[in-house]
Image (cartoon, rainbow over the protein chains, first blue to last red):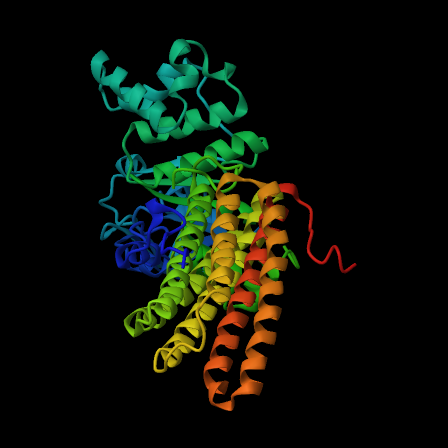
Length: 289
Length: 229
């Protein structure tokens, strides 16, 4: 008989090991079952939050896992941005706001404890906003701004930080020849990546992103989303987005909020294929919100 | 993998990773299916029960990979809403995987018949069944090559070969029927050979289905049932 036991592709000749690799991927982001076993970096424990007399968050209680991307989704006014801004005490800047109950701990330390240095906290927990907000300075000076505030002025150190941060934000190749020109001359997408580079220049552990792509065109959005994927190798990322598909594309864990309450949190695949709560399914299917 | 199976719009990022994993799982399934089919045919020709046992033992891996691939596909569709070629690839990957798993089941069926046939002397020299097997195994290998090399025209040529397998199957069924009519003591062996031939005919049908899916992936035209319409 001429039928020989040849295989289709020599390089993919299956072995018990190759089957094992496919069934059990090494990347925790690909292996959804292990995501909730990752170490907790932020522990949100029964948090109530008030704007004056108005209660905006009701008993929010869940952990945020290290070096994963966690997305907050939900309709306008659901509390997702409020919660995000609690994570580096940005709400302190709004009069009449307060945490009414519960605690938020980062690496085990209650960030609302009076002994916590808020400037130091915001160094550890960087933030990128909806609209890019470069300072009216050169690209170089934007990146080193945080370091100069810390009193670091050695040129070699600053140069190294600028290159590392711009490479980290996938912007280096586009701006390396014009570091000393105004940051305001960059495109919207480049400005947003510059803001991400500025955030990572001070070596934070966590990056909060509040609708980082809502002012960007689709091409710039893809670049920022790819950047988010790269950044999670080194940083924990929390992203608020109105764009559900963006949450699907970029995040490992998705939390759905409605009227100040956490309705559901799970792996992004679970939320988008088989959410446990009817409200979540209605929202992601576009039936409300 | 040295060659991209299809040209995705994603170059890196989570989408590219997910598509790469679907591709990897599909090619691993194809390779396992090819090996199991070869082992099943050798168990018949070489009259070796150990090979039959190996086919049955390894089939569960194919089943697991099929389930795993469908989960990857639905996750990718739900989280990335793929369009154009990527969207067709999701549909096609799931369908090819299903056809590969069924080819694996037919290989198990052949291995079981081989074990029965190996208990008794050969009814007749094995000529037609190896011919069918050669064509069917070639169709499987070529349909996966067409997928890897993006050759839609090759897929069309594979589809034509299905008729050769059908013709041999019919001719063999007639011949085995005459054996049974002439000598009832041959019935068990003749029926087992008929079932092997029918498995090979079904395998060729699945390969034809795979080729049609490959054509759809690269040409965005559905050529199923065209002659029947």
